[in-house]
Image (cartoon, rainbow, N blue to C red):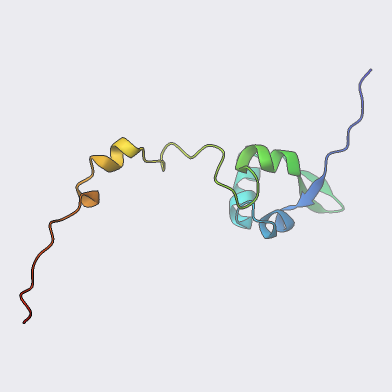
Length: 93
């Protein structure tokens, strides 16, 4: 027997206000197919479960960082900009 389970759905604007991602990012993910949406009374709505799956809890760290944007600790350790420069004495002039 298949149960008809209703998922909590909210508008894209409401999802952005709750802190999932920006409205433009949510719309991009809907257009790309990463985030499913449906029309409800002429407005796009998304399931809260899908928002949490894709973005994690609102205001929390991302579930999985984008590999193109994520830097590993090893990458940062090998980066010359992250090495501390020796202190330079200015001599009180």
